[in-house]
Amino acid sequence: MLIGIPHMTDNPTFSVIVPTYNRQSSVHACLQSLAQQNYPAAGFEVVVVDDGSFPPVRDTSRAEIRKMNLILLRSPQNEGPAAARNRGASCARGRYLAFTDDDCRPDANWLAGLESALAVAPASAAGGHMIDGGGDLFSAASHSILEASYDHYNETGGTPRFFASLNLAVPTKEFREVGGFLPEFRTSEDREFCARWLRHGHSLVFAPDAVVVHKSPGGLRPFLRRHYHYGKGAYRFRTLQAKYRKRRMELEPSVFYWQLIRHPLAKHAGMRGVGISFLVAVSQIASFLGFLAERRHAKRAHGASALRTPPAAGGWMGTD
Image 1 (spheres, rainbow, N blue to C red):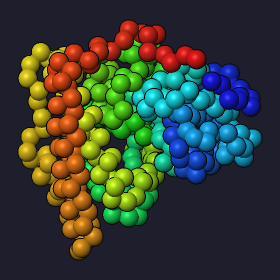
Image 2 (image 1 turned 45 degrees about the vertical axis):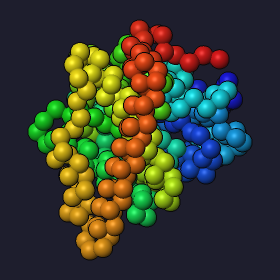
Image 3 (image 1 turned 180 degrees about the vertical axis):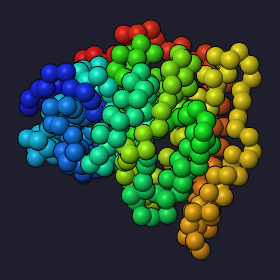
């Protein structure tokens, strides 16, 4: 459902896609940051996809509508961030799709930083830098896991292998050709997309000047729930990769998990580092339980048969 288009710009460079679900104040702050971009207003549009929020996203963006080329879409029901991003991309007119989340505040030079990286490699996907904006230990732990994962997958001097969808830009044409995000993945959809992107012969490049401040929802229960679902997504991701490679499922080496726990101790002094490291360890227990739960579910559903092959170009689009 199309909620409103205040004004349009022909052929913008970027279409910024922001999926949102039941985060009215967060998406408002995200839009305020996008309205302050040091980038020509005619050079980008913003597509907000309300993924079945209640109450719907309607009036929170009035101030930003006057400043930006803003499109508001509403999904009839909650379908997950992957499906929401695809829905936004289906009506995007930019040369590039720039993805961020409703709990993020892109830096004023975010789009300019992405453009600089893409100017060197226009057919590549670009990922930027994240800053923890939460302040509490739970947000810091989630951010530490992401930082350590980037260190692991995107080693200095090597070829990047993973960028999170909260700070990712992709050429629109190639995004559609590889099939977009897999909508059945509610977590790990960015890991799956990056793996498939590379498998299609494309590359990932780092955009160091494209910075996003990310504030993960605080509290123990949301923290545990989030990482439990990350574990479920990890199982689906690993299963699908095993199908592609036609061999047994492969997990990360044990040193990777040791690096996750050590990372906050090296970055944060004193008890704060210890506390973050402890929460990282707890998060991995929650993820492991989610991994096992999804494994049991898959066995009941006859293995990984429910996981489909990515669709052909044009087959992934969400329509009303």
